[in-house]
Length: 389
Image (cartoon, rainbow, N blue to C red; front, side, top):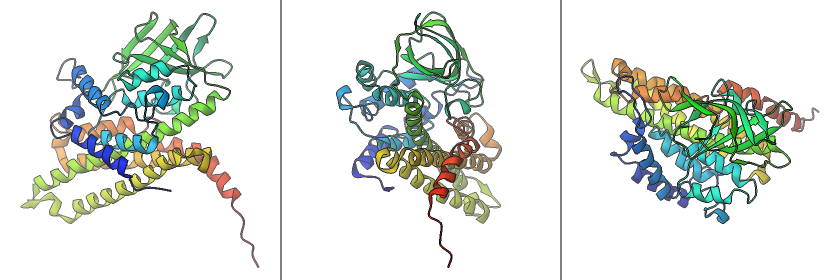
């Protein structure tokens, strides 16, 4: 098991750090944040510029197969990207696009054209959830009426990121018989209605209503659709764990800066033992979580060697740890900032909001533990019992 970054990963991290510099990072943190005092809010031009920059760095091409003009790199490289983006509170279509690319790349050569366009900057929004942002993706996507004879879909999807800006929608759902379907839709197709959610993060999440909406292309998920989706979901969880780890590091950074600036009893807050020890504990915890996430990414790139069950277990464990660390660090950031942290001018409230929304995105820690409990019991049962003499 490998946890140290390779030379190629360090080079990728350096390139992303140079791109997300002190001038760009503040724009990224607020590029999808809709303040109630700023009218329509959001900035599509900034989002487009950031996505263009990431495309120029080759990020969308990282996981694509060589036949689609990609680099064929795995979760280890993508975890580096996700962690760096999490530090600047990135909100955009890249995570969904990478997940969609991972699914389409496992479906043969039928979608090589779309994969090439993804490498050139095309975006895909995932529509898989119904009701809450967590539970639907932890097992099987929510119910949906798929009429393959007529080539239409009917149903409702919730919490679809940036549904108004995506080039394509990838909709997954189960029919009345429990069969899993996947289809690509044009966001402007007839019968498709978008409604923006009002949620804690004040971001760009939409409900999408489908009423006999024509399908652009059906996605053949092979003989084991549920297993294929779970494999793709495991990779998405590893990347999301890395993003939450980065979010925690970003929240810790602004907390340390605030502790240096804020003075109480005649000296900086960071010189007092209680807050200093709390920040030191968070730093150690985030370092530990980062090691677990990198180990999970290493295993996800070698499923044949470690086994699908081990990948699923490590991905869920990494995500649960990263989610708890991100929530705790964002909460400490609010406390370190005091009343100022709750104002629109402070970035502390941004980290707190995003941690609350992102931490249950692919399953809350409680859901993840319940999901992997059978895997843990099976692993324990398989261990040889000691012989008592």
